[in-house]
Image 1 (cartoon, rainbow, N blue to C red):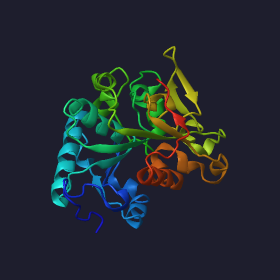
Image 2 (cartoon, rainbow, N blue to C red; image 1 turned 180 degrees about the horizontal axis):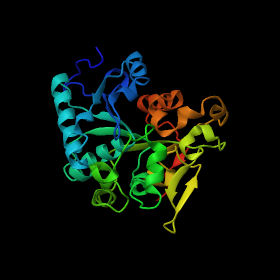
Image 3 (cartoon, rainbow, N blue to C red; image 1 turned 120 degrees about the vertical axis):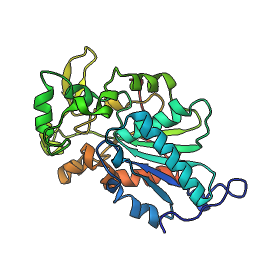
Image 4 (cartoon, rainbow, N blue to C red; image 1 turned 90 degrees about the horizontal axis):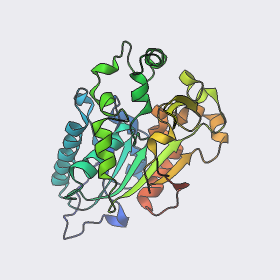
Length: 290
């Protein structure tokens, strides 16, 4: 079974060879299937995993999904008879859902025991793309470029609760910023960059990613994954890896490093496993203050 019975806290909260249960949290308009390259590796390494599915909550806001994540973790703990630490692996907006639970809702009580939080392409500082969708001049053309690729045909951002909540100046992003990270959790961020300027990296934008410049203007950068620029992801003090480690990988499979493919990227999967097995494994660097 993928989700074996685990020991109760007080008897042996730590799994054999330090294998903690992993909670997998997919992103906005995504699904648990994005983990189909990671879960076989987890199984082969005897790492139990719990896949949180919030696909049925399309119209819900951040807090509602975060509360559902809390309930899901509690249910899985009860089913497994396990009360020790868990690791949480998230993609994109799923990272902010988990952070909202851990930092905003549970930041004072710290009842949720989490050892490691790994965010893959997370919009920690709000989403430039969410803001761009709402830009009256650029938004319609950007949405047309992403129709069928990242958003559905006829997509209207005004009807999307999560997109509105993750505009950089929103109350949700402000609450996350005010809460700050927890010193009892190790934060890791996995990012992609188009190191070779390859258009096939993310064809919709010629291999680049839109970001908000310090002067508030829009600019395109290769420091991003096509959807999330690095400036959106930075989280003070978090360890950060920028992939690929070898730029030659972009010549072979550039599409594997774009935002939607990152959870299935073999290099990302390998790095996740390194952190799960050795949380103190050295990263590329430490995230700067955004």
